[in-house]
Amino acid sequence: MRLLAALLLTGASLLMAGCASLAPKPANIVAEGDVRISGRLSVQVAGSSGRASGGNAGFELSGNPRAGQLELSTPLGSLVARASWGPEIATLQTPEAERSFADLDGLTRELLGEAIPVAALFDWLRGRPWPQVHNEPMAEGLGFSQLGWQIDLARFQEGLIIATRKAEPLVTLRARVEP
Image (cartoon, rainbow, N blue to C red):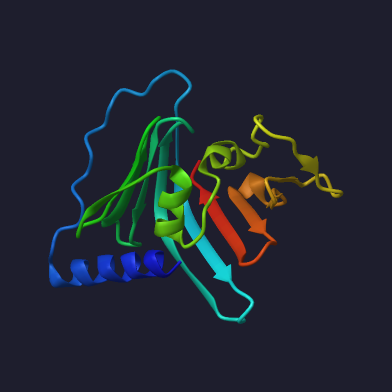
């Protein structure tokens, strides 16, 4: 969370100072089954100390759970972070540096403050459970629980998905998906 907040503040500072953000990555050919989902993303982390941290950004998620990309941008559109992954490596590129990680969990932990199940996120953002693991429908029928997360789809028709992890530290991920 601290990194996301720092990235957003850095992006805003760079924009105000007239410095460049990350260069846009050229569009590549999308493979069959790949998706492209964009919108606004907010992540809040609350530990047992009662202190919460978080941040929000524009996002574009593309590809698939095996190989893809997640870009985060400031409210004014400056690209401040690009996460890319493939079968053997995950990389995080910011205006300051590029870092490699052994897996996507390590990368999202660095980028967002906690590990986020990106493989499942591809399905969650489309309003459905990830088919790779068991899920439990919510009593109200407006969501499901999976991987220790509760996915609230009560406002899915408005493009809002809320994923909450109840384990410490508590994590709430809100995504407003563009049509």
